[in-house]
Length: 194
Image (cartoon, rainbow, N blue to C red; front, side, top):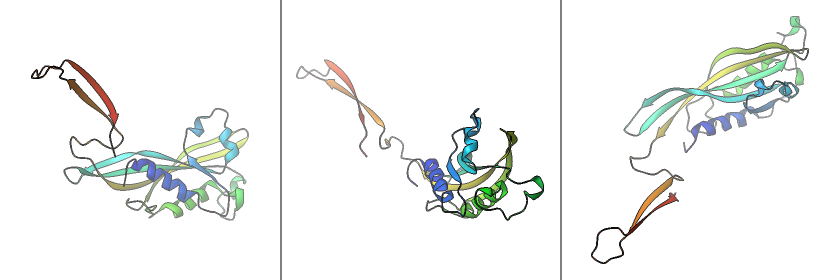
């Protein structure tokens, strides 16, 4: 896996969750939508948001290589569109899809997938309630499910400069022949060559 594996995995999860479904669902990276005090995100429901959950473990496998085990959170949000007695039925369609069905459909799309990346297949994990609330007279449910995966990272050799980093070079100017004392000095910072 090349640079920024966290970004690659999150983008691949989003691409997978955006695959065609029998209903329309907003799917994007989580950018603190739930913290919006105007609740503008309510208009986008049903919605799925993806965010990085954290690195859970790093295991050394060689002098410069590691296995990184990470978790990603997939949040689902939906209004409670049916009466409480009917909310557990699985015959809802279109925008009437329930929050439990969103969780299940996301699991079917992500479980055991490598997302065309050099990662271990995604493993579904815990589901937790994030919000069960009344918002603008709508009952809203938000749940989060953890998905875990791992990949190998290899660090550059000591002293190697990764592509794109700044390199500082010291220049000494010897103006008098035979004199090893610098008459002037400069520091030059440049971009490392790929």
